[in-house]
Image 1 (cartoon, helix red, strand yellow):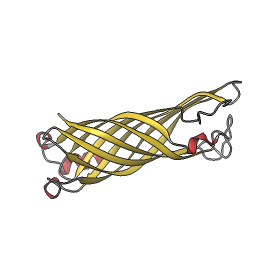
Image 2 (cartoon, helix red, strand yellow):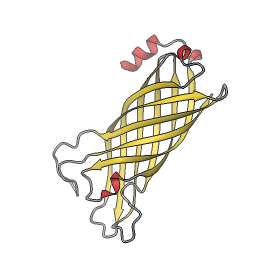
Image 3 (tube, helix red, strand yellow):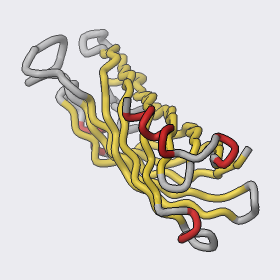
Length: 191
């Protein structure tokens, strides 16, 4: 319904700014009940891609990211052998009008929801994790175009699983929750 409202106030599809945005970045300040490992709070490299359709003020985007080694610190003798966190979200984007930011960075805010795939394998197969959890994200960023078709984008988002309640399962204590911040830099390509 909200998306329909955006389509209703948006100009025709021909006036939309369509972008594909491959990005690199890092996650930080993670917190979880899924493991006793403190590696979640450390910095981890992440990669992904984002596709957006932006009108004058409103827009939508789809964001996919993968962070390998999320539950690993890289220290010798570590219990976790392999791990990753992947996110897939759909979002609403609200930015300053294009005419106000034509020759400068265009700030925006973003919020939405989707799923988070969480995976970890350990040496003894005691603390293995394989979950898909509903998640929400919110953040802010700024974009600027160097040419008519190519620009750069800087963004920060917070991701957090939804639910989990107080049920105990596997190795989680106090319900299954995972949250972290992600900072990225992208190349924005208009098509």
